[in-house]
Image 1 (tube, rainbow, N blue to C red):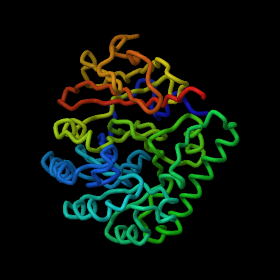
Image 2: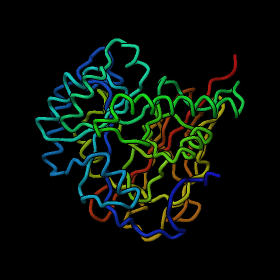
Image 3: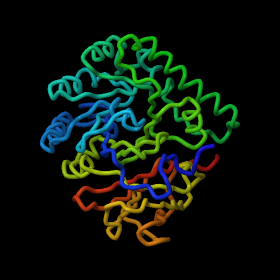
Length: 347
């Protein structure tokens, strides 16, 4: 059974001993026709320069995974770079720039579009070429379909669909990239960042680690079935905002209710969070923001310890997020994000 929030921490967990890491998530590079998933090349170059300016260490995603498993440590000022979907501009535009900077990166591959030579995707040969130069690859599902349970699906049909999709993709990645040593086995990113408790249960049963697309840093207490990443596209390329994200810490949330992001049509949702005691953050300056609604009130259940937050008005169907941040004693912001996936009303 999955806990309310999948955190390996005690009731009174201290500030994590393992340093926090910001994981960036990209899709396309220099594809101006797709601003929601693409980043301009000049902005991407500026972002790589900012990482260098801040003297951050870009670590392989494998190092982040090892730290989560208690097998390695992380430097104090770490960042990891991931790219979803395996678009061709990774090879043509991102890779040359990342290689020149000496920065490792991981591509989460949706395998069916690659196998079908879908326009604008990488080829397996291009991936093997990048693997030979140090790039790594991981599972983004076979079909790249949204995985949460559909209203018409039985629990059994949903479990079978998700398991088949994930296992089929892992088999294709092993067949094409297994011999390169560049495949991060058992590491998965939800398509569109969408998940629910039933989908996470399948990931958990496989013993895998999964990433979403909700913002925030990762620490050693991170939720192994819903790890956050900072999405980067044309709308989210502001240098000053990125500077804050790159230096962020994870807000040490030890309990989240409800954990499941999926809800029915147009609700006013609420989440309740408990923050670990002993964290060096100024919770009096905690601020929360909801997609498309701006700042929303923070209602304290227990001052400095437990609070609840909700949108100001019903959310529209689709993906939304609540982001909560608070400054730490070292000037770095602690960050927490939770996704909501609101289903449209039945026709």
